[in-house]
Length: 360
Image (cartoon, rainbow, N blue to C red):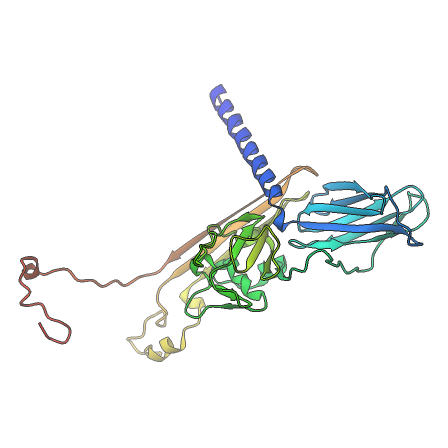
């Protein structure tokens, strides 16, 4: 590479880094998808423990945040990404207490209290019993769709908005497909159809609803492989939601971790692998009939959907990346029929132009 090419490469790299930082700051500011953890630290007698150090560590990235309990033994962590965490509490005169596998979901606001035992700080007590994380902050109700459902549920065309129907009370509007209007053609618990609000990592990706209840199109559809989980909420909205009058769907995308992970997929559809419809089977010539097409009257079509993803560390415990790519190819014949004017019609003579019933 010559000097000019090297400068161009460095400039491009710095531009990408700057855009990434700007996007990260924007994503943090849009905190309506983030989770919160708060609680009280006390000793075995029930007395609160002030000035205890509380550390919460992302299990995937090993990035940690620290805070100290106040005079009432309270602590709080804000704007946490939905994932699995380990929470540790330590202070001189007490054993260090560790609570692993604290799983946070989209928009959760949970209480997690600790009871410390007297002893050396070098001794560790691990909380292995399952604790119920109570939400005493918000009365909002919603349905959380985790990555297991996203990856395992059959999706026609791998369209993420179809998973909205996993929420109770959500139904499709008769006469409208699940993918129409960007995937907002559903009703949820009495809300008007096509008024859903979609957000990805806190950013609004659907058009705001008009004054007359206009349809809301989703402008960006994350790939299925890039989605970590999402939450569908249809009541008790908090103040940050107000662009639409219907359901709110909060989507969280995946992030890189300290280890490299990747995936690949290939979905295909061909006539030989698909079942025929009842009416096509009924009207199709029987087996052995020379008029029966080789494809069994299914038609000729090709559908391919394939791609891959990879994520990992750029600098371990500091900077991470996740990228994915998907391609789709559809090929099928379409029969179009049309008419063109005759020579007489072009000259203005319609004496030989007849309707299907034979009238002039």
